[in-house]
Length: 278
Image (cartoon, rainbow, N blue to C red; front, side, top):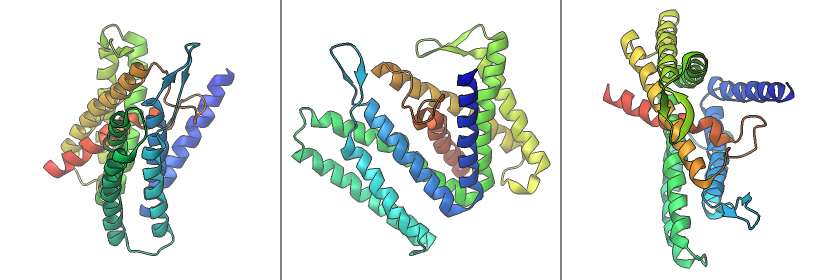
């Protein structure tokens, strides 16, 4: 019961932070994305650099060379919150900073005293493709429609809820037993049905809030369901590979930040691609 209350409070606070970041405007949303990116990157590089102790316990060791890069980016974004540059110029500065840091990270490998510097480089590059880039692309989706970003978050939560409810009730056939034994095909289709209904309902109730017509919104619901499921499975594969249950302990009862945004990282890329193609 105590754990349930803790999970509920933590979940409510997390949702409140996400909604505040989206609804308060472009700059708060940017700060939210960069904060999530930095925290998730630290967790990821810690997972990718796990060291097993003689007693069998796993001890994380953070790749600070990678994590510090995104802390630098977050610090650069503080210029925006101080109002020192226009949003358009800020986008250029962040992309320029990001590309420059990629070059710095590559050159840093030459001077690294690590036993296996290429392993560290691979973790660093993966963290940027897997976490940082999708979170940066979120800004472009937000520029097109903040309501669509909000709907993307809502659909991810709806998908999780629908998959859990249906899967718990009638789930029999395993979806991807090798990686996630608890997921079922019944839960997957239940989550998809919830997403489609929620997408159509949102467009019907608030037609002026969304750029897409009702059928494209229904397809959007399908896309979120499919890629949210893949996103969750990808993170499960990472955790299973290093032998841990959660990516971190920042959110009591929920694990780490990466555990909360694993679906978002894949859904954001799929959403932007969908918008560009249509």
